[in-house]
Length: 563
Image 1 (tube, rainbow, N blue to C red):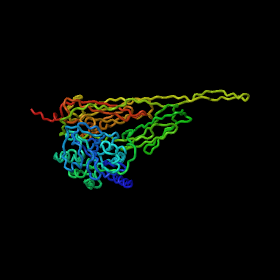
Image 2: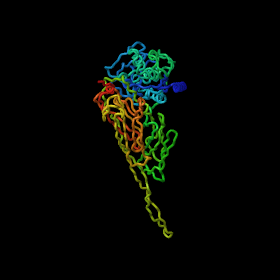
Image 3: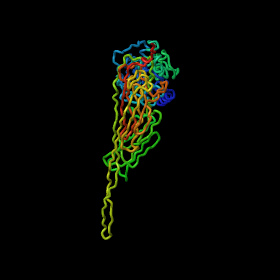
Image 4: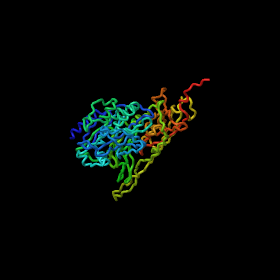
């Protein structure tokens, strides 16, 4: 059994282009995946990468009959979502009609331990993380608990899990939850509306994120393309589904969630708190060794008085590609509460907002409140040092004379350090907006941004990094769908950031375009966070915002005045 499972995992790694799922080790995963790049959406038709989930139905292993109601699992909060009830693929194949449930609440489970990405936007598979998740005892027990089925019978092979990927996305200004099967049925009923606006998601990456390697439960294995858009008929009959069953108990223990998140290509600081029950002096100091991506960083000669502690750190540079990094720490002469860290290294530049178009509408839009994100404006830490205090004592040897003996002691001194961050942000109409006046402009034009973040500290440069990362989110996406990573135009303790050149700007302007439909007489407020100012006491961050006032739209400027 284990040899067969290992072969299955190898096949998945070779074939997958976007995340598919590999499940409990002791479980058999009849599941594979494919996909590709997403392209760009519009401000009223878009999907946020990572906004996905799975629908799981427990079925009888022999007959395929459902022994539980379908259950949706997702990592994110889902509010005001249009859905189609809890119907699985087998039920749709048996003739259940697609029925909107916009007037009823949407029930879902948010796992305590987050699921890995299920549907990819760029064809970058996450198979290792998915295997780790679904091979865990935690995931198996979670499904059994919420489905109300016996965990031991599941492990004995009495049940199979029917698993369907879900995407949460905005279509024509409305927020939807759909499995791949539901998206294809909806597209049929709407005359191809999804294929026209969301085709890369609903007809490629969502249905191809899971499919069967061999036929089961009346669903055929998929042998077609794993990288191109698919027909509604093929999606309904075959794609967007995986099947898992169990015949062996999975290993104990929970998913190892990341301890820290870093950005790609960034200077960061990883620290541990060292503790001791005895005096650590220059005669018997402690040492700490960090093992990161094949490189060893050693911190020697750490001195701490008995019963006290000190933070010990290393400054290093993250790789240029997203990945998960395990950091191990070896300690000599003292102890620390944690000696292994899982660091998730992410690329914020993967979530660029789509191009707003002249035909975008959003009649039900309401201006959202500004995000209430955590910020860390100050940090405090310190370093112990010690010096010898001599106490000379005469040692008398009688007639033979004597000699002086130093019976001194080590004296400890603590040097404290602090750091703080402050910032300012200016949002203004782009310089080439023809009818702008101060902070007032018409919707549809671009806005420019200038951000300055300043680090104040009394610490040496080896203790800190300067501000490195800034990004903005926007009201038309409820401040949570897409972000625009800013470019750092000057570095140092007082760093400056602006928008990057907009790929949709004819003139290559460093702007973000406001949507044409944004309400008149309303402040268009951009929310910006500055991150990656690292200290031994963690990362400093600051939240900033500024606005322009919207009065009219650029359509008002498109006219000819003839006498």
